[in-house]
Length: 616
Ligand SMILES: *[C@@H]1O[C@H](CO)[C@@H](O)[C@H](O)[C@H]1NC(C)=O
Ligand SMILES: *[C@@H]1O[C@H](CO)[C@@H](O)[C@H](O)[C@H]1NC(C)=O
Ligand SMILES: *[C@@H]1O[C@H](CO)[C@@H](O)[C@H](O)[C@H]1NC(C)=O
Ligand SMILES: *[C@@H]1O[C@H](CO)[C@@H](O)[C@H](O)[C@H]1NC(C)=O
Ligand SMILES: *[C@@H]1O[C@H](CO)[C@@H](O)[C@H](O)[C@H]1NC(C)=O
Ligand SMILES: *[C@@H]1O[C@H](CO)[C@@H](O)[C@H](O)[C@H]1NC(C)=O
Ligand SMILES: *[C@@H]1O[C@H](CO)[C@@H](O)[C@H](O)[C@H]1NC(C)=O
Ligand SMILES: *[C@@H]1O[C@H](CO)[C@@H](O)[C@H](O)[C@H]1NC(C)=O
Ligand SMILES: *[C@@H]1O[C@H](CO)[C@@H](O)[C@H](O)[C@H]1NC(C)=O
View 1 (cartoon, rainbow, N blue to C red):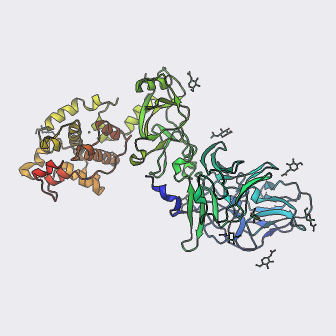
View 2 (view 1 turned 60 degrees about the horizontal axis):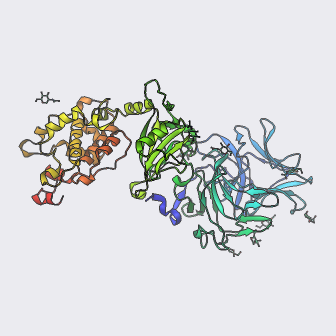
View 3 (view 1 turned 135 degrees about the vertical axis):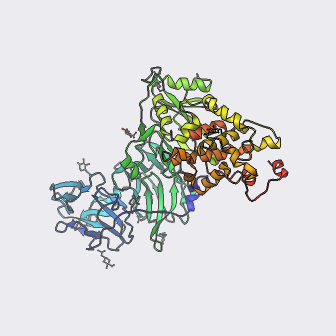
């Protein structure tokens, strides 16, 4: 079950690392004679909201751009609620100025270039305009003599946050669609690809690229939105929905302090906690990152149980590491090696190949290739079309995907409930070969052969058979079911393979007899290895003859696999296929428990009794 599943009423805190400009003057008005410069701020008359120039980010993460924004005056963790010039930041070191320009509009002036980089662009009909930051956080450009004549207001141009009292939805008369748009990343305030919009029926949607909805509120039924009854009651006490000839909109006067859409495309409602000085997010949809459409971009695998939750598929690399680091992963990944495509062959003389990813929620953009009636035909169907990038063969027959692959989500074993599929990703043959070489840490290289082409034949090849013949019959290398006399399956070989893998790791091919000398098994290598593994100290195990040239990550992986192989209960052991995938790094294994029987034999706390075998 995903960690964030119960987040709805859980207590998650957002930490926004933004610099709060130092406070200085406290007026709420910009007028022709009175501009706002540098670190000056407007503060609403009730002291609730502030407006000024701010630089997102911190010392290590900043691009030195300034934006004009509105934030809560009393919240020290600067949280921009509205941004004027997201697309046109002020670039240091020029000192920006907010002023009433000669045409009566409110504008940001860049002193270095003497140009206007942002303006309200309203049709002004009087000569006496002023801009006021109102008590509800609305920045209003109006006639100074008549407060009813409003030319422009920030509430009509919300960014990513819904203000208490502001409207979201359609003005059917002017055609204005007031919507919330995510910011590009954690420091770039330009509009991102996600938005929160209201349909003409008043149903709320989270959208990707304004087109694809990945969350819907359901319709308003006079008390709450059909699909989200939790949005009433104490969460949103005074939530209003208006639907008439002129308008469709939500929300006028509510207790919400901060509601909007974050850089990851998730809707949120948060309140500021005075005591802990943190935002408490008490409503969030979708509940997990991986349910946001295309959150990781193309050719990635999204896994909510991993940090970071976006990772490139094998054979691909991050398109824009800079954006990636700043929480914008929507650019996704691109191929290391182009596909050779179709029946043509590349320089290595090979066509493209596939590698499997297990327990996947398959992307829903599949096309059926019903002509294919076997997994093999399915793979051929994909290979025969240059634009095909993946296939899956299962209950629904043969599915193929074309072009960029989005929304590939890793399911955990417990959450998949058998619904997960195996997705076969198409890669250049050359790419698969180089993947193989990359993970050639010596341990793995030895263990799977240099050519514990892939394939069972090679793995169970000459070298392994020879080792197996030698080892069989030696106590410790026999799976418990041999001894107990229960049904023997192929998992017996998995057990022995695990033992051989330990031999390879230790480099002590001949030492087994020494280990068992005089019945003293305390130095039995596999148990030493299992204990070191659990202690996080596999480094001390490594074959001295391999010297420094050993990748400890590979050693740990090999130890993990070997330790799983020698579990007492055959059902706990991996299959040979899983062993191979793990060695290839395609399958991640959890930390294994200590094998009980071996632990007992080699001086663990529990003596081995004949009854022990009966319990297996
Ligand atoms: C600002 O607030 C004070 C009281 O806090 C009030 O006396 C004053 O009239 C307010 N000014 C405006 C322009 O609303
Ligand atoms: C700066 O911001 C980045 C991105 O939000 C964050 O990962 C990092 O921890 C922050 N550094 C400090 C010193 O706060
Ligand atoms: C200003 O007026 C022009 C001409 O009437 C119109 O096309 C334009 O949309 C108006 N601009 C705004 C911001 O209302
Ligand atoms: C202010 O403007 C409104 C709307 O144009 C108008 O109805 C009202 O009469 C004006 N008030 C004054 C005092 O001019
Ligand atoms: C978003 O939509 C626009 C226009 O519909 C399109 O040109 C653009 O390529 C789309 N962006 C992505 C990332 O698909
Ligand atoms: C909130 O909505 C109600 C009903 O539409 C309206 O009477 C009230 O004036 C609104 N309040 C604000 C602050 O807009
Ligand atoms: C909800 O609205 C009522 C009536 O306008 C008001 O008295 C109450 O304080 C509001 N509750 C919240 C939490 O804003
Ligand atoms: C490959 O598949 C795409 C998508 O189904 C299709 O449009 C295209 O015609 C196919 N190309 C060939 C050569 O079959
Ligand atoms: C294994 O033992 C044999 C015989 O004792 C010896 O000749 C051989 O060198 C040993 N091999 C290793 C790898 O120690």
